[in-house]
Length: 238
Image (cartoon, rainbow, N blue to C red; front, side, top):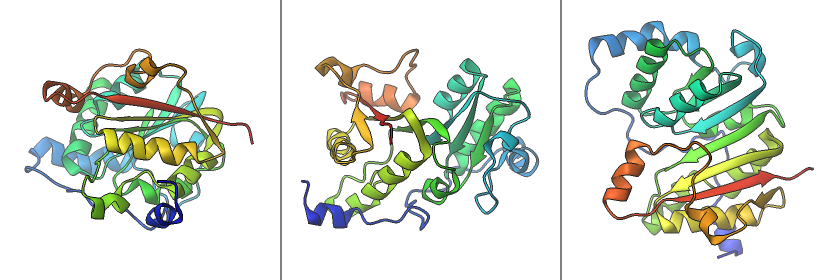
């Protein structure tokens, strides 16, 4: 519904904090806990300090990508290793997911990933205008109950932030196995004049991006009979 009520339900200011999920699962193994003390401080993004993306990384890079809620980090690791010329900022408040990501960064010697351990809504205002090439939001919590829809990360306010931080021609890429959340996202992006929906055929909705490899969460959804939906929205020239 594109109504004033729907717009009101989206009122969640980016930067106020909007993470409602579980932050910790099973106890960390000793080495995982050690990585939080030794490796994470070197990779952590601090939104309290001015943003200088180039200064975050040890070498010159050609562009920057944000992944919101990277889970166990499979997609982020593959993208970072496949595109060493790009810098990646990954966001994941779930401690056990962050622990897996830190272990892979250490194991593979990845130097083009930086990490944020808190709510992504606190980080979006930190990025400069037109600074990112891609923003990924893959399989976010759908908050299926109507009374919880306001907790969904995609809102008119976050869409406005995506529009601000993406370069002209940059992309917001969204994936979900929950039809209602895909429709919710499509509605909010379509009513933004800053974005163009990239799909040209019905098959585009079910076709993942180039070189896509399924995550564990997606594999589980497929086993349980849920079909993934992939949406791409391109940032228009101002």
